[in-house]
Length: 457
Image (cartoon, rainbow, N blue to C red; front, side):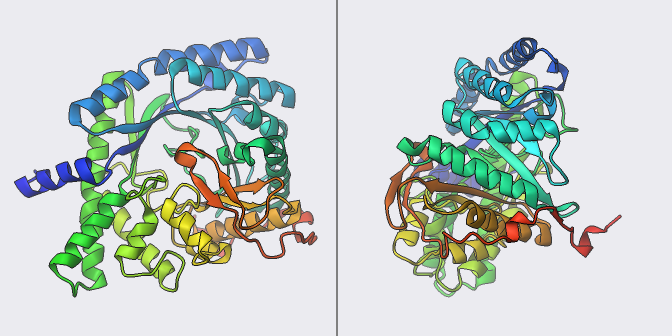
């Protein structure tokens, strides 16, 4: 049970510290919609998604209003389209994406994720058709999100898939050049992708999950920052161990709030409750920043020496606190460090405190990877593939999820400003050393073998 102080502190989080439920995501299994006929397949998926999601937004709003806690994003994740639509060609995959976009508008959700493929061990015909369709599909839709898993600790790294994804990213950027390559903001390349993640752009419904399920993504970087500041105001000589304890207790409260909302939404929709994703997900709003937590911890800025250690402490404390609060934790669960989506991180990159090399090193201990990173438009496919491969190696070797959401901005160079709008934010293009190299390493193809510690049977 909560005591009076805990209840009052939670109310304060909601009123003044940007506590919200960042995402409620309804997962819908589409395997029973499979048909060799494209029109029948599109009819089937529309019928099933609309049937289950018709009341999603209304229910989230009602539950949020009841508790005074806003549910920011309402989303849908579906079975990977490369699997349920494996018989279709590339142009037909684009049609499917357009149908999904139309369905998302019909039920008024923010995004639909699952235009996805799992290719860590090889690319099947359905996977190839979807990958080839990605640039056009993401350019022509607004609410469809895509993810492709190219590596796992058990399988190794599919270098053929990485090169294919590099080409797809460059084409998507070129098609959306009028919007600074915005289509790429809806595309993630993963190592060890979770099957139950509520956050976009990577969300999809994994094989082996229930027919329908509610997954919840909580947030609250502003809450964590203020908790640290209050602790230091009260006891200026706090040790880092004590600060980690503060973060852990705060994450516990935030997780309980998220699970409360998620379970009630699931109950009202008559859908199974899945998991709480504990991730600290920032927004471009002042006071709702991961980067500001680093300053609260006594660092000049995210990116300076000590940042990786601070992020490791933050990530671990968030996981421990959330795991105590809920028995059903999943997704990514940790701290996101997206460049353009966090005003403080974007400013740190602008001022030179945070470089892409330092950002990559920090992804060894965070929960996602090189996220929402704008890079020069003249970056070569080979260099882009090399950056992706490096990030996938971090995930594979460390047995953790990592990802890239890289945005080559056509016609622009390092230091130029880009505006993506909304939660996607804005940033200056980060400098990429040797961006125009065409080294042959990524062209050898094949699979980089799994590490020896993958043999755990």
